[in-house]
Image (cartoon, rainbow, N blue to C red; front, side):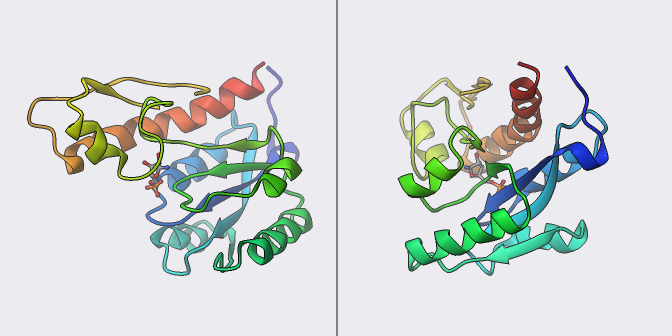
Length: 180
Ligand code: GRF
């Protein structure tokens, strides 16, 4: 695998809507020598997203777009992505469904992370739905990892357990796609 350093890393935008713990883990990963990506832009639909704080902390440009008009928001986002020469998008807890038109513009360049073993439990309230179903495992399609669900598991404990795995798997998935 060719290692990319500094300037020639792939410029990446991370899209978030809330907490941003995956954003934080991606930023930390991006700073490592072995990371093929740099994080140059944070995009959110939510001006109150806690994760926007990581933009301040790591001095990364942030942009918030109002998705009440999806077409307008996406057009603005696309122009911002272009302006910043962004080549890849990592969705990390982004709670809006992007249009086909938007996705076409970044075909094959958008990654997402989800806390279930897809295609199971697509959508929202994943952890609660997993527990309701009495599933024995949960995890995440480039890479998936199983997590043991204990008898007395709660949404909180399961979320914490899965997030810890997510923070390792997202960077691993990025390394995997660039090592092909
Ligand atoms: C994660 O569980 C991710 O898999 C899902 O939304 C959650 C985002 O968490 N898509 P965070 O904002 O990265 O902490």
